[in-house]
Amino acid sequence: MKINPKKENENIGFHYTATDEQIKLHQQKSAEEIVNWLESTAKFIYEMQTPEERERVKKAKNFKW
Image (cartoon, rainbow, N blue to C red; front, side, top):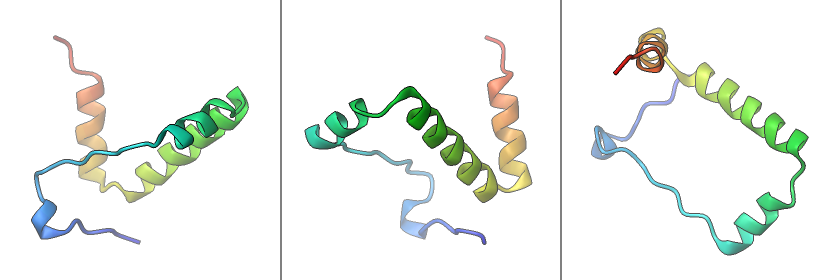
């Protein structure tokens, strides 16, 4: 499955807003639940990336200032 961004959002980025209730619910999660959530999110992002995007991210992570 490939997701194509909306043309009007191209090169804009994104933001996310969390409510106080969402923050409180997150704070109630165990460390194991948070790690599982992070792993599943990372897997989802990886599966959505093209090979070129994966290479770009890899280079950015290894960039030395």
